[in-house]
Length: 520
Image 1 (spheres, rainbow, N blue to C red):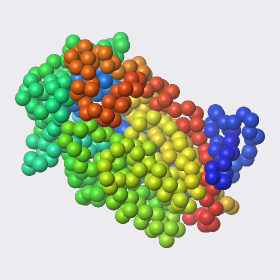
Image 2 (cartoon, one colour):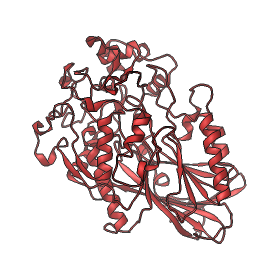
Image 3 (cartoon, rainbow, N blue to C red):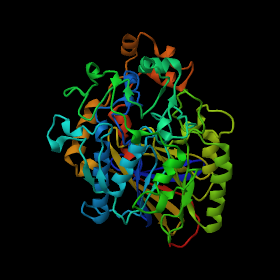
């Protein structure tokens, strides 16, 4: 291990990177501290119904996430990851890392559908999971049963002694994580996601007289069935020649969920705690003390866009003024009064808060400046970008914002974080270790990893899109939209960007806080 000391606004921060470091800096001893809390950070599982007609598969030329070759394997990857976490917790995998809780920072599902949410909950709880929808034709897939991701399986689930908590992500809230779901109809089976006319046209909806995506209808602009694998076996690219429009078996369990239903289903769980942090009704932000005898408060934010306009693609995070002033700030005041420290969790990183949404929001600079002014602030953990990334936020009390990669995209990892209190100084040490289902893979999770490894770096192609549909992206999406800006960047994530360098992955850093307190 090497240690690098640097200054941030007059405060020394000590950072230790495993396998990296500062060659010009001398090696320095680090007080390990007392382990107060250890937890797993899991995010962006994107449990996914790949057969749903309410998906944007025909935008795959522009957006990698519109279709992935590994998307039929999401439940199996989640289950394999939970098995590995259980094994670390019990000591079956060394070194033993007992977990006080698991924090899932959102995008539990991919398309805000009820059946996806139940697959996610059943996998977390442990039990029978049937990752098939519509006509249950998974057994007709032309592969050996042990290689078939569409068959029912018995999920191990997280050990009952490990509680888990949830934050809401944009894919838990919106169609494809991007479009508002219209919930005016009394029956959720009739809910749909209105689209801009050009987007609906590109997706092929106008052929059915439709102007929005509906997951429960019997028509699909891109038919994918449980019996089909539309990935090319060699390149893992989408086989467009197998993609047809037409009639499919409908499934009412594909219905969209709103915030209230999302919360309610977390009470329909055999694992603890009831609701996994959420209340029965919105708002979906909350705080808990994960370990009763440890004075650390977990503050979970809801950064999904409130009431986005119809048809306009919005996936970025939003911090509302109301949540900031009436919830987040009082949480720090209560923590100060109770002698607690604060760990903040959200789906989106705070850099998203600078993206335009409208009045009544808080920007990145104000949000970060407030957190960095609080002596009891420990860290902010988040997901959304599907990458491992560490950023030290400067201020009077610098703190790390820690992004963890997704389970659907490369490198399909989770992060174990240890919080160590240094009694002599009142400082904190934060230790991060990446963990993968590939530490002890199942047959199907290994196949998912093989597929995602082949697909990393697929370049979205503006030219291919224009040739296929006879129109440019500018003809489809609103001018100056974040979508067009992203398309303009014209590149895909690399393995290095999603996996992160050594300093984004396994690290140990010390935060000077110097608040005297006895260990719990």
